[in-house]
Amino acid sequence: EATKSAFAAITVQAGVEASKTESETAVKVTLKSRVVTWGDQQHGGDSSGVQHRLDDIVQLKATKRAFAGLRSDGEVVAWGSELYGGDASSVQKDLVNVKEIFCSQSSFAALRSDGGLTVWGHQDDLLYDDELVEALGSHVQYVATSKLAMTAVKDDGTYVTWGSPDHGGSQ
Image (cartoon, rainbow, N blue to C red; front, top):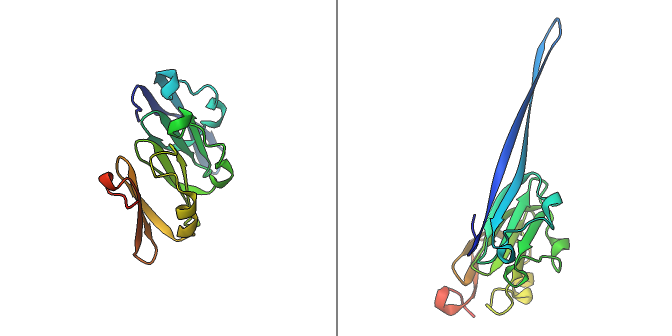
């Protein structure tokens, strides 16, 4: 993934251990992932503040100036420009049991396994709408994004769109 001027990649290390007894042979394979970042420190190139939480990342997403990583345990880690979603501390309590992350150029959305949605990032781009996200409840199945708009597809087949009307939103 890449922001405007920084990069992040998931690296994977594999380990293999074999053991043998008289009656059976066992092989244990372990995989360990971590994230490496480089580039403009203001745009996510410096992940040292969250590196201790970047183990077992299974998904990476990037806005224009921030990254978010989904851990295998369902927690989300964000870093980079605060304005573009690099600081998720205000919603961190809701970033558990997440199954997928989505992003626009300036905001992130995390879809939880209960169908709830948490959005954070740039507050001036019409995507950061707590009331609308709360009104969605826990019935979201998928999120589609454009540059400055998001659409939540609900489990009953209906959808809700928000963000910039010039980019497919409805506000």
